[in-house]
Length: 422
Picture (tube, rainbow, N blue to C red):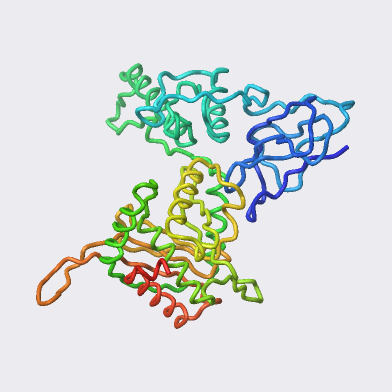
């Protein structure tokens, strides 16, 4: 009687949360069928069957976190069928119903009215498994929540906003009804419900990120910053985008930086390396991770073989991966294999910052915003856009001179942008 166990679906995964059953007890199962959805530290993945038969048991309720290797279901000949574990949000075929697109909302997390329990209509709302579980735990009707995602898809952040709005509404109502009783006779400042601290559960992605970043702090870091004159880079970007106008592809400054890093890493293979404990791993492929903030935490999709791809390809892949990351639809392969990472906060107006290394990579580049700086040119004071880039380095893998040579050449590539495309 084959047992279905929680698989390792990512390189950093230690446990997974069963977010939805797609097969019910008694259903026939064929090898390769998707039995359930599993939420890992990086994304929501499919749990596939490796045997033919009948799903006889569901050993785990929806919403349960299960360590790798622990059984979650049993596939047999159908003679030992047992009712599924009942806990958490509904796990029957209602959750498997086709999603019905909702019209785009006016504001994220807006609810039309508070409700005491979820209704069956929530099964047809476009939503993520984590958002569905959070709504169930807080007795919110998903059908009454306006989603901020594509085609009105409801994310965890939307549900959290709806919970906060309901809490605020209830507090105002309580204050209005009990106003006379709240007046203290001693003249002390009153205490209201909204003054209490809010406890936010740590999601799978943020929890794993916290552990990995804590591990990163054990790495001996050092930092170095260069200032790049991006006057020609900005002009080059405008020229490239004009040539790509008909294709609909747009190249960003970050795309140029990623491609520039790929060219520099190809010339400096010692930087395209990882710490291997008692060895150094020099990677043959230049795979650049791109830090993407999402409602569930920071994820790093990877542009594979960035040194072998055209600038327009990198731009298209980056746009696609970033969108899939925010929708929690990345696959394991799209988030593994990175050899170097770029983290850009320039769009938030941050001039300069230092980034934490993503182990076991040897380095990460932090990119700030391009800022006009006064420069004397031909006796005249002119404004020139300057960009600060900061390299964080694992001193176990690289020394200062090696890292400085890489950063020097990267600066030259960005200031002479034709080198990016050759």
